[in-house]
Image 1 (spheres, rainbow, N blue to C red):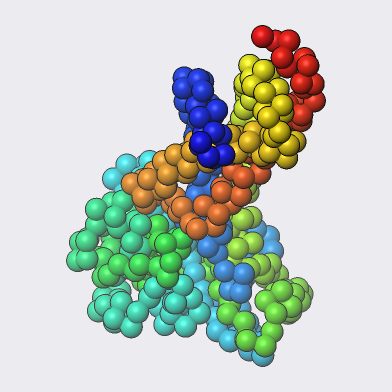
Image 2 (cartoon, one colour):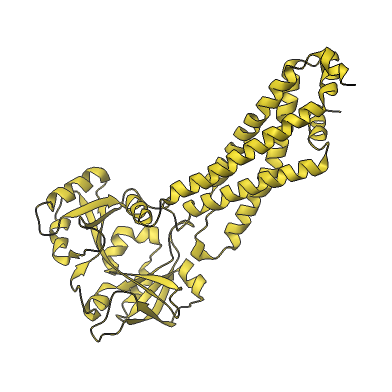
Length: 380
């Protein structure tokens, strides 16, 4: 009987207990996998760029910036490209079915952020055929069941048209895929000239400018220069990286990262207590066997290693099942959830598995070492 075979047999000595323990571990790692995949996905900020800058009003996102700011912004030497965006939030059919429309100058958007969004010259050409045409992100198109050529109506929450209505009708010109799986594609891109001409209020204003810095300048340095340039103007600005912008936006509703860490931390702390308690009882049941192993010449290192391998076997099996279920959930979940089970999530999960297995096995291993051989034999 090999050392690993002995450890496996000991771990499965009581099958029901081992199975229940693995179910607890699998549940904890399923929670970890789902919550971390959420942060890594389109609803999180891990895919956001730290190089692309967003310029908004210093007074908050509800205040627009004048289009007149475009020229002085583009004149800053360290700015390589500038685009602008006006957002229209609304719903399709029912109020719960919320969608977002970003109205932009397509050529400028292609120059600044086209690569990360997966925009192509063919998509831009399709947009030029009519002013009411839009590009739909792959995640949104799959969630809604939309196809190219279909006409859709978005009822805006706040942006009214000049005729008093709030229904914005668009024709789908194409679908953009996004550069990576974690790129947010749950929105539509419309032409700014169409939205700007038809809206009742806020004409010739934008919600944000999108800036691509020159290669030789730090984004943080450029952000400070942009804000200094407009500090004494009628429309002072606040410039952040795309990642910072999205993090601040999510924090308007809740600190998503903190909530996820608290949930995962609570799950793992509970798991740690359950496994440690179970392993200590398991070692007490085997007091006589440990005494026999010591008598046969097993060193302290061998006994500690045996217990740690037992714990690792339970953790790796249960944790592996939990991460597998999380991966399957990310594959089959709707794109609106934005779950992305990335390699980083897997590597971090494996590291947590190893760390918890060593931590939970340490206390039972120390308890086993402290058992005198004489006392061990007295248990029989």
